[in-house]
Length: 330
Image (cartoon, rainbow, N blue to C red; front, side, top):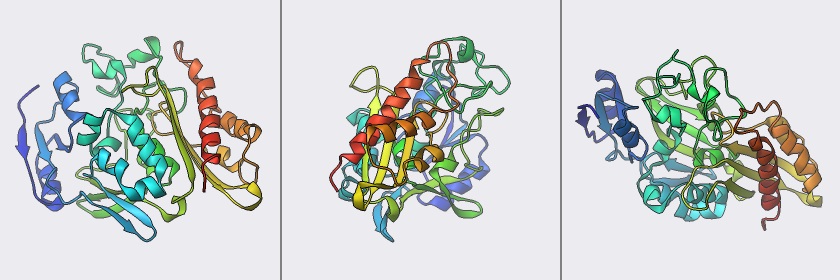
């Protein structure tokens, strides 16, 4: 780890100003991912802006929805009554996502910005990693690819987004609120993340100097039937092979009015397919209906030599998550 400067501002404007003045700056919240990457030599910032004193630690009910400050700890989000009662899929995803110690440190904004757990990205002794060094190649394509993407990848990168919380937020139609030198803006979370294309090192839509200040959950997905499923090699702390979040609105006559589905650990971002959701509209919530949607969720999937099993696993996870959601009491 190389030497770095350190600042601890007390307000958001000051934090943004420091980032603008200091080259190669990183914001530090819980540090559960960034510090690991610095120790490994993957991240080498010249300056850290410690944002833990910023006033971004509130969970507030607004306009029928909920706003979660960027510095709210994951454990606080999972345990909050408004989240557990109105958006239980988010609580389920967070509790599935890490150990209790990590949840007590990790922040909402930092969780969204965690980087891939690709072993080649994490190990600088592998020179070929377009995410670390653009133009160097992708060692995973010819290497060990069991945990890697089957959807949305490119010839430049097949790494997956590893988180759980963002998968649930995608199924909930959440938005990310950003603040930067030009003021505030809001993005649907499904548009916050980028696919790798020819530039895998650009992972999201954050502009220079911008900071996540909140995540907003809409009223439209509150109190709907939902479920989160995480499939992993062991039940204790481990990253998903495949995860699935499902949110259903089932109306009179037991027919589905709206559906939202997101898959995790199968693509470089939480994966949502609008055609799969549309095929559920007006249908009865049964296995046959869910299997049709599951097939559309993996349409166009392309496996590597070690991860072809993830295609069928993603189908089954989709059906299981939808079935569990449909069986939730209203």
